[in-house]
Amino acid sequence: MNAVLTALAAIQATEYAYLVAAGLFILSLYWMNSPQTARRSVLAGVLAMSLAVLGAALDPHIAYWGWMALAIALGFAVGVPLSWVPLTAVPQRTALSHAFGGVAVGLLGTAKFYDWLAIPGELTYFRTTAIVAEVLLGFLTFTGSLMAAGKLQEIKWIPQRPVTYPFQNIGNLALLAVAILCGLALILDPHRFSLLFPVIVLLALAFGVLLVLPIGGADMPTVISLLNSYAGLSAVAVGFVLDNMLLVTAGALDGSSGLILSIIMCRAMNRSFTNVLFGAFGQVQARAGAGEARTAKSETPEGAAQIMEQASLVVIVPGYGMAVAQAQHRVKELYDLLTRRGIDVRFAIHPVAGRMPGHMNVLLAESEIPYDKLIEMDEINHDLPQADVVLVIGANDVVNPAARHDKSSPIYGMPIIDADKARTCFAIKRSMNPGFAGIENELYFADRTYMLFGDAKAVVGELVKGLSGNSGGH
Amino acid sequence: MLFVFMLASFIGLGVITRVSRLLHTPLMSLTNAISAIAIVGAITVTGVAHGGAGAMPRFSIINFLGAIALFASTVNIVSGFLITDRMLKMFKRQEPTKS
Image (cartoon, rainbow over the protein chains, first blue to last red):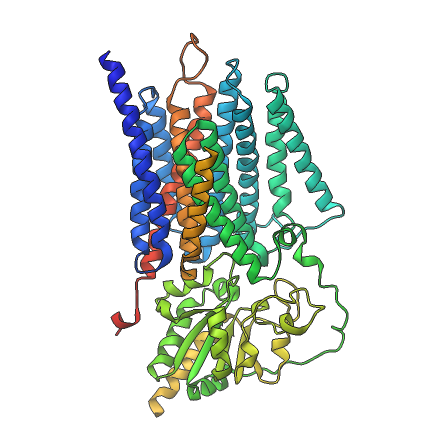
């Protein structure tokens, strides 16, 4: 009798712990709305997660404490070093983390399926449907995210450029359709068709790879957001399988977060979901008209430094090139030198600059540039006609004026930062090779644009040298 | 259950649209950690003896799959929260506090 009462009390305590945890998760996301309160978010999140884990551990049926301790200890051993990666590697880490989430969910679904398969009557329509959804989402997120992480990390045997082949989309869709059909059969009669379960797992794994294969680097922000959304939705599916409200709530929060980020990314590129997923970017640029050789003017860093000195408003447009060259700390030096001379320096942040949402903000914040100088595209575009100098550091498509007027351009309609409207534009670039999307940038040939050829870090370093060298004379 | 899902999604949509664009990268790593809430499921699957009624309770392949899931979720929770905090710390600096 006593034991039953204690067990009941434990169940009650678990429910309360879950309730508080769900509330804290919502608060955690709410506090992300401003940098001032954001660190509270992490605190709330950690607290919520601890409550949830405690709540789950109160289950009186738990027997294998040793195994759990081992798994958790190993998780810490891998997780802690994984949080030390340099900030330029954050996109890869995020993708990898989606992969971990996906595999966890997929394995849980698999475990529950075989657990219930052994007991007649346990695999109800509802449970099997949830398991099929869970396993599909989980495993496709797993391989898809691994592919994305591989592409971002530039692992040799994973192609960076979009890979396309005939009938690709039809093939992928057919694969998905087969997986869903197998799922339906399984839902109708899990015992007779139980052999289809591993087939679904394999199809989901393959689909994840094929889904990300044709996607290029410039589309990575969208894909990562989408995978984020899948990871959340798969947690929801786990919640349905295990009849757990907390999982459903937290998963839904995560799913909607990923969805919103994907929508923001798509809008920032003027493309639809289907277009990102099914229209490989690399294919479009077989354009005529590139025949006429136009020349871009180039300038030396010393000359550029002199012009910058005379400016009163300098706008810096960072892009993925800045991240690759790890130039953010040099940019901070440049910022300091210019600010010290009373020059107003602002940063123009395009939503898809970099390889994941908000990538540039984090890099610039790392180099200690105050975040109120990081300005969103829509806002900074009002200031650009007044800007004396625009300095484009490793950004390309996000400043290409062709997006405004050239209907034949693949990026036509994409909102851009109006770098061409400033009085003078300097663009730092390694060479005249077109950017990731393979599109020629009109900005580089504009009258008021001067190219600074070289590695972003080296060129910004020379600008800094040019500016500090002159400071004695004034 | 579907009801809870719907309500939570709406709350999520409402809250996330207000998140500052500056913080989208930390937001994503935070939601990474939050989606590792699957750890709750992993704990149940790993810890509890499975098998039908009357079967000898022993640590089975099912528990083992759970343990891998538990490991993966722990990685996400630990690294997700730590790196989010690391990034957010950088955003603390503001103009007046600078020299």
